[in-house]
Image (cartoon, rainbow, N blue to C red; front, top):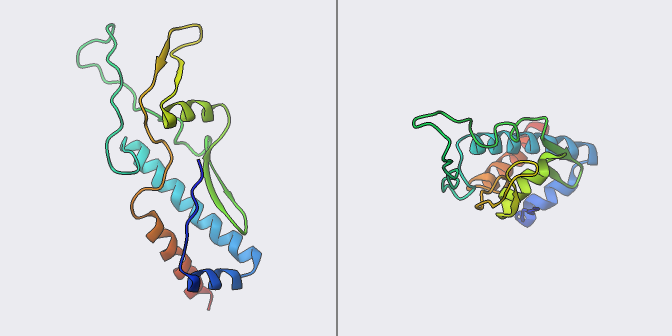
Length: 150
C-alpha cells in the first residue's frame, strides 16, 4: 500500500531547496513520527478513519470472560514495523514474514488459521494507512524543520 502526499507549490519549492542529506534527515523524522502514530492507532485497534477494528470471531472453546491478547501486538513492534527514509520518500512498512499476515488483514483476504488448519476469510482491518491529521503533522514537521535550519 502506498500513499503520496501533495503539498502546496510553496512548500514543495522549499523542500527542493534542501540538500539531499537534509531531506533524508527530515524524511527519517517524519517516518519515525508516522510509525509511532501508527503503533498507537493499532494498539487502540482503530482503522485510519477512526472506526474500530472488526472484532475477533468468537471461538467455542474460549471460556467466558477470558482476556485475550490484543490483535497485532507483535506487528506493531519496531522489529516488524520498519521505516525507510530517502531524500525523496519516507516509508513505513511491515517487513518480513509478518507482512503476509498484515496484508491478509489489510485487504480482508483468506488464510489458514493455523498450519494445516481450516481457512478463514478475515474481515478488513486497516493495519497501515493515513489517518486524519497525518497530512497536517507532516506539513508541520517540514515547516518546523525549515524554521530551525534558518
